[in-house]
Length: 80
Image 1: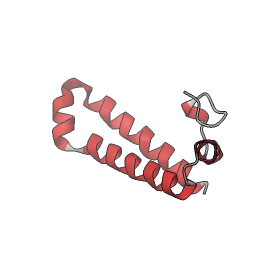
Image 2: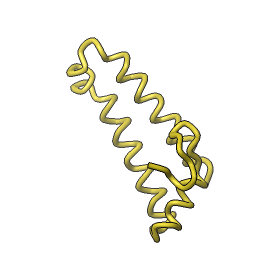
Image 3: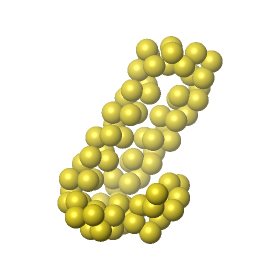
Image 4: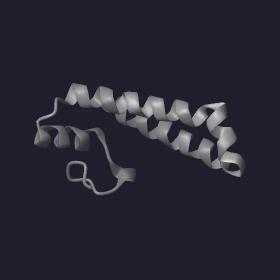
């Protein structure tokens, strides 16, 4: 699924989300806040000790994923 004209999650920028919001009739401020909220909740859940415990041997991967989410969310939200 494309976000605006972007096909790669690694390359998605604020402008791509804004384009998608425009194309779908969703308000950009509302979408931006939703992206921020979901990013925070996902990163928080990945840092939860219960989640890490369930991950067992994959705890390092959980930490890596949480870091990627935080970095991408921060980058996206700074582009306002």
